Length: 386
Image 1 (cartoon, rainbow, N blue to C red):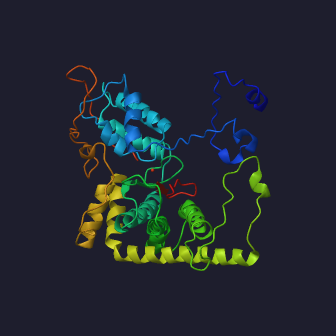
Image 2: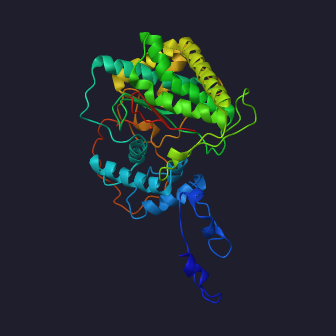
Image 3: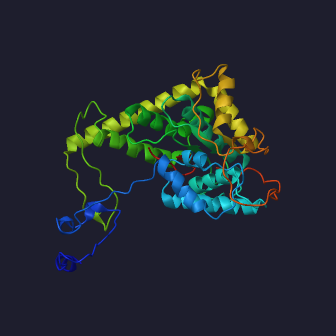
């Protein structure tokens, strides 16, 4: 390829285009002037870019009158173009399953849950004791996500086995994030500690459910110390991480700091994690009533949304936890589910629907499906990172 690029005549109108998701391992010879000397970064689409992507994938599909793609775009931060295409296809499949001729907002809501959380495992049966422990585990995550000021708001909480997880607490950011301040990262660490701390608070012992929470927290705390200079003991120094595994390169990775520095780093990681664990214990002890209420709601309904989490915590607290207003995730069909899991009339959102019969046939929808920056109660749970 390099030989061919060098052999082009200046008068030839030939343009070579290549793509990679690992620019860090490219041979420098490819990037010299005269070769691939123009680099275009293609990041994840933002709000203004997600809307036209959705419009392209919805073209030719029959949309209900309540569909507003602006709302869908606002409620899908961090999704790639392929994710959005999958979202539309899943929404169409969900509409077919419930017997509708058109895709409605409730279909987009269910599709978002399916894309983010994975498919529900219908065949898995949990004992009552396991369900209760999972309910308290997920309740711990949900309470902290709602109470902590800088944490992402709760989207949905479920104790239904979904994907690789036995239960999940899913958070979604309210806005596009490009940098993450320290208080946001610390609240993220504290939220992940919620499941482990809730089990310890209620049962007095621990289970394997917090395995993935601990792995994610340890990695995040290590990056705070090693890469982002967020440790007073280490100071304004940074060492790069090993990065992704590529052709066994991690086998040859060596530390670029001394053994003494390694001990300091380990000590700082432990200090950060223990501090967030203590903070999680203090908050959950203060909001024990809210934790119990969420656990009961999960045992009764199996899945609740972020609005219900806020209501239960506020009622148990005796006053609004956030007097200035609660954090909320954009809901595609906020009125399609009530506190008992029963469907009601969909929300009417202005839209320009595709041509279709005036009266679309619609059958009663099935029970609300489970919804995950998901935090799960399982050794192989799924967790989103900031």
